[in-house]
Length: 302
Image (cartoon, rainbow, N blue to C red; front, top):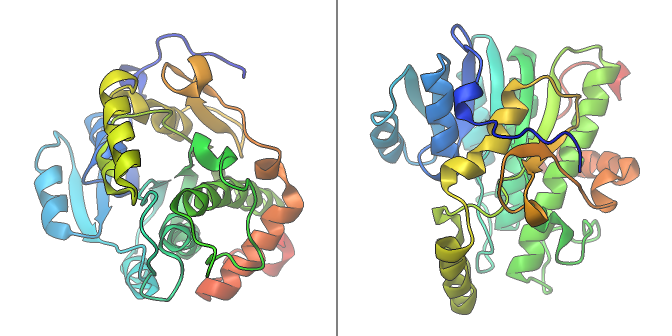
């Protein structure tokens, strides 16, 4: 771990007036607290949410400039529709929305739900919006990318017949980090000023854990939320830090406290598998094949 940041918090955000941010899953959890903090700092924040009614209710609680647009990351047609409706500069894309340790189920396109939502949906969205992006992409991963088998199951990313909620979640979070690594490589090769970074919230008390498949796991997480976790606003700080501070591309930010579970944001550690450029390129190729969405900035960057 490096570069501890002391008491850095949302009050240290720069003036973001004139800047536009898209936050996926902005109606609740760290998505909402990130959107709220960005809007309070002057950004115009687009709540990209599956349920616009809930999104509007959340946006109404924010003191700042907001709008709500429908986006279902588990439906590539919805992702394409969202991107097709975009027509102006975008300064910040926060790939935050996600699902965690669900019972086995599939997206509308037939992909395993966690891999399809957490990775493929954001992969497609980022590439489709990239021609409009001017500053950076922040993708929210998890310290749990180290768990499960610790690899991408390239022979069967949908885990057909071998599904396990924890393994699937870990794979999707590892995919977030490999996506960030390869995205930054491509941006650099293309001469783009856009930076790709990743962040994780540590152990933050949000509603994400309430949808896990195992009731014992849900109970354990509920107790952890009460006894160990930091608040959702604390869990948002790594995302905000990655979104606004001068960090190198492909940086990974998390809490600086014990076990990266809570505390001020700092550069975080990642598994060897999450740093593998060969796996990152292989995942990118597979993701293009699965989504039909390809790199938009020219073949010379590949």
